[in-house]
Amino acid sequence: MHRRILAPGALAAASLMLAIPASAASYSPGAPGIGDPYYPAYGNGGYDVSHYDLRLKYQPATDELEGTATILARTTQDLSRFDLDFLLDVSEVRVNGVRAEFATSGRHELEITPRTPLAKGTAVTVVVRYSGVPSTKSAYGFSTWHRTPDGAVAADEPEAAWWWYPSNDHPLDKATYDVSVAVPNGTQAISNGTLQSTSSQAGWTRYNWRQNRPQATYLTTLAVGKFDVTTSTSEGGVPVVNAYSVDLGDNDGAARASVERTGELVDWLSGWFGPYPFASAGGYVPNTTTGYALETQTRVYYSPRQFANGSNASVVVHELAHQWYGDSVSLKGWKDIWINEGFARYAQWLWSEHEGEGTTRELAAYVYASHPADDPFWTVAPGDPGPDDQFDIAVYDRGALAVQALREAVGDDAFFAILKGWPQEHAYGNASVADFRAYAERISGKPLDTLFDTWLFQPGKPASTGATGGRATLGATAGPVRQPKSWKTIEATNSVHAAEHGH
Ligand code: TRP
Ligand code: ZN
Image (cartoon, rainbow, N blue to C red; front, side, top):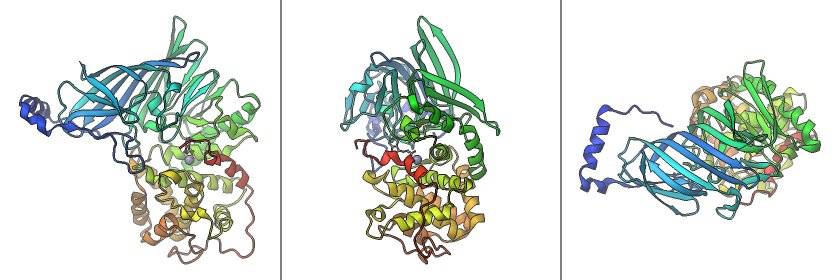
């Protein structure tokens, strides 16, 4: 979301150009991908979205979704045509009020050709009317639309939007959202941000949710089902909205005993990361059969299985840490995933230390000692893991080890200044691993190229000493390294690494 003031002459200039047919030669189609080498077709080129207004109706009995998406965008090139990423059936598209031609192409492209080409730098309003049964749609052979006995859930990474709204589906193009969903009376619709209002008419209840801060497409979530909703305010003043499926069975108590600590944990994390960046916090636990949790902005998604062995505050810490590291500051490209996962995992280590269940240093030493030099674990470079290993355990555990190595190289004062300063430096924006290194060098006054290369990019086990150029002695403890008390609880939050996700 780049806000620019429209220069007074721009409109006049645009219509002048449109008056000359030959000028159309400078107009070209927007690229079908935003340019991410991990996922070349994800997102699109030629425009930048500032706001999505989604007005939907969903029938749980049949999985029928219908709606209108109104998208506010600005062109970034002279555009003859542009794409949105989407899988449902489109009946009408309007660009600036005028009916536009559209077609599908590729795996998930909706190609839109406006009646008149769009000059670079102009505001565009796109209205897409659509309907469909999301569970019948797939791309690349998978679907991430999760049906439940009482509804459905859209929450996945990096793909979730295609099944329920048309978008520029890449974290580089963040936008604000109004998500309005009508569902049969007695059913709830949960989404991001604050619930502005509800209204009922003729057997349907409409829920109006608002996210007033930029949000990546994959962090936009929708859950429809029968939920028990709780509201509260944290001691630090953050409004909390949580929702629990009424069908959580034996997991219900442990789910609530974990997620109801959201306010406490948001406040605790604020002590490390600075002020909570959003107007609302919370999480929801639908009756899905998935195993993972996801940091959907302000309203975290938790699979019931996260609580199968009892409460787990550590997973709540992980997902809430993402609100700063991943959601407010989003990655520039998917190769930058360490910015998200290395720090969310490190927050779990800080929590372990706070709980007296093992210090960050003990956890780092344990990770280091647990993987011998010939373990493939060390072949994954958390700083650029490649799409197949994007969510490999090494991105989390070696990623957090790298954070500890940084801490030991720059010292606690600089480290904690970096940890708290970074979310402010790039609040509501995007940043890369290279940006993080530059920032850490600036705050610490130390060159960190060797440290970053060693811990994040080299495909091998770093030497325990010396490699950091600092005073790191990770894993240099004599004798066997004991498993920290928190290890099993932290490990239980890793279920995404089980082969449940088919790509
Ligand atoms: N980002 C999630 C977390 O660590 C985990 C995750 C990775 C995930 N890949 C996913 C979740 C795919 C859902 C789907 O909290
Ligand atoms: Zn995570």
